[in-house]
Image (cartoon, rainbow over all chains, first blue to last red; front, side):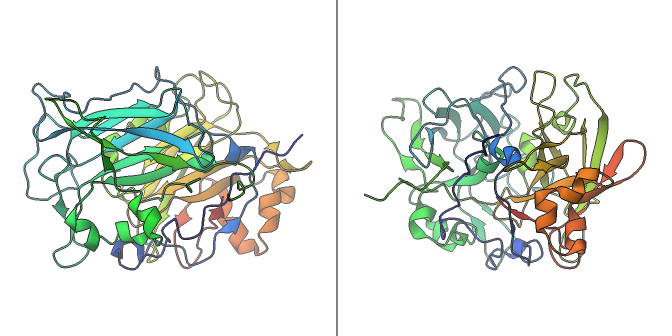
Amino acid sequence: MTDPTQYRPLTPGTQPPYDAPGYLGTIKRHPKQKPHPLPHTITETTGPSFSASHFPPLADLTKTGDKPALGERIIVAGRITDEDGRPVPHTMVEIWQANATGRYDHPADQHDAPLDPNFHGAGRVFTDADGRYRFLTIRPGAYPWPNHRNAWRPNHIHYSYFGPAFATRLVTQMYFPGDPLLAFDPIFHAVPDEHARNRLIAAFDLDITEPDFALGYRFDVVLRGRGATPMEE
Amino acid sequence: MPSATASQTIGPYWHLLEDPSWADLTRFGAQGERITLTGAVLDGDGKPCSDACVEIWQSDPPVSDSFPGFGRSNTDADGKYRFTTVKPGPVPGRGNAQQAPHIAICILSRGLMRALVTRAYFHGEKLNATDPLLLSIEEPARRSTLIARPAGDAAWRMDVRLQGDGETVFLDV
């Protein structure tokens, strides 16, 4: 049997370390031992394929209650490609987020900001044949967290991607351009490479914006590619 | 070409996504030997991680309409995850090697900036003695962190220690 083609190693500096001391939660949860190398086998090069019949999509997070959700409607859309620029089609994209006041509809969130009975804050779509996805949601609010004195998370939307293989699984967060809180956020700054970090910031996009309806933001994501690294030009 | 997008922590509120039925991989009527796989996720002080997202993936039995191959479980107040699935058989490894039956595990949680990947093998499987990954881990005590133990009728248990004494072997995939 032919060996499966390996997914390429992640580019040094572009991923956060497990030990990110500015983010206190990592102190007791990061492994001390180096990860053990595992050449990819069929277990790593295959992955779940989700069908929309078993996993129903929900692209509009603003109309899950009796009334429209409160806050600034926004469209977040983008394209998922691999490191070779090829689209990642028909893959599941999940998002979850705080509401407009900066409160999650979650029992563990005790922040003293109002819940919106018409906003739960979770969605799921599948990319099209060209790797594109789109959600309609509410711009999430900033909220305090107990990491350090006067710590506030920048506005963000959590994203989960699968891609074609167990080795392409990615969970990340999308931030908003111009957010003054980004400068102080240890989770954002855990990514060492500045360029890689800034790619987590969505771009305002007038083409995604719909007239008289909602501002649009573009958040494109790259999942790992297979085989040898392409030659630099 | 740009490199893969940076990971960020899943945080404590990922349950907004959760559908608890996903922890049962037999829910679509899968055939085969039904088992449970449970265990506690523990931090460097041995305290339970009660807000983790544990995902499993198995390349055997093959994915079909009745078997998704993928599951997701929360961890409870004791840090315990729990899956119901079909016991995997051996799968091909690299070269002519055979891999012992195993389930791939992905742990995402608050305090983890990236996913941690490990595997659960099954105590008593003959192929464990020749499995390429298990053989590549020299210390027996480290190797044993990847072996689920029998915990009753068709029940298997593998705890995951994120840090310190008995730290689970995590895989660079």
